[in-house]
Image (cartoon, rainbow, N blue to C red; front, side, top):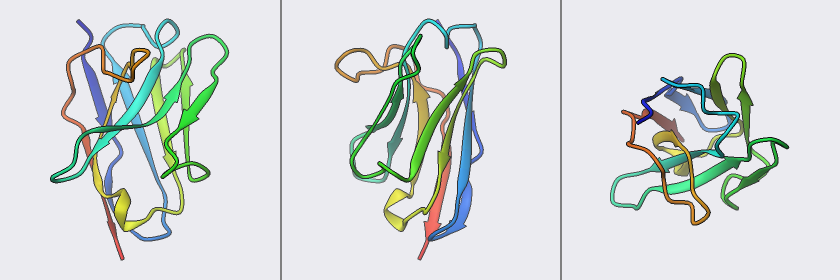
Length: 119
């Protein structure tokens, strides 16, 4: 099993930026697709960004497209999510994990990191 630790969340005003980081207990980022999910109160957890192994191709949920960028550093064994032009609706707990073909997470969830965007 892989342990994941997310960091970088915080409180920011609308229009601001944050950079989230995810570290894993094993060197797996070059092998598996990785993704960032988020969950806000009363809503299901959703996959918002995904990066493929090998060619580093990326995909995003429509709600974050053009504002969020996912990237991977295999040497540091980390995955990052750069979030720009944040909106109050981006407020959520953000988690990283490895999505399968259906977007379901492969591993146990970490503790996540809280992002709060004030209007």
